[in-house]
Image: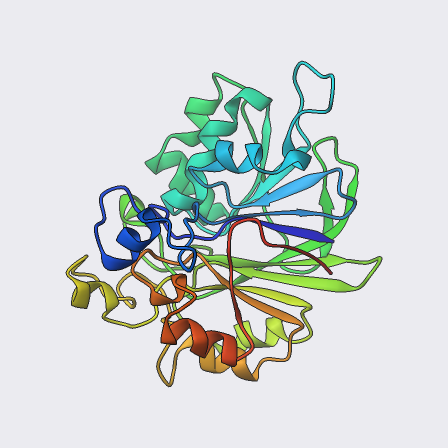
Length: 304
């Protein structure tokens, strides 16, 4: 399985267009320790030919252009190697790219019934895209099943969704409940390589941790380092908990859990513009590396 991190920032990207915080200012100054990042999305493929997106960020056009494997075949007037999109929740930074994909024909979207309802009622996604290529909805399985390509043939990957603590976005009422947020496990039967993708979660329960055991790679929510990070900087009145994100730092943060987790590769992504791990020279970034966890950057690629 080939895995490409197309974008590693949280909503708004990095630097965020209306943010003058120290980190965004450092990124704008082209400081090599603090590279810009687009909004979180990942591409996966079993064969390097047929690809799936894990979430579709508002930056999807730029992300496709930056990765030749997603461009039209040489000599073709139109075409795409994208076979579908696996959506973890209804957050805008995870789904607005679906609108951008309208020129490519019908889009296969894998999402829970709760997320689909939020997108159809809150964003009128199905209604709007019905005037273009349209959507084909798929309810993701709760145990490993073949991940189909657009024509229904097997992609070479197995996939399953599992519940993670989270909530619906503000435009959909902000309530927590079954199906409002999931992670994905993808398995390559040829190599037995297993990938976990969890860009948003409010807590690491025993059930979630059990799903991560034995994974070759874990892509984890790295939105905020501290619970009060955005409040302390004057960037927001919301804490990490109110935003349904588990902080990286602290005794109950995700870093301590990842430190103990046996996995070949552990990577933070969906990193907010206020999180100091965005700067490779920061003490917080060093703490993450010392724990055996990588800070994701756009363009990072690996095979499992």
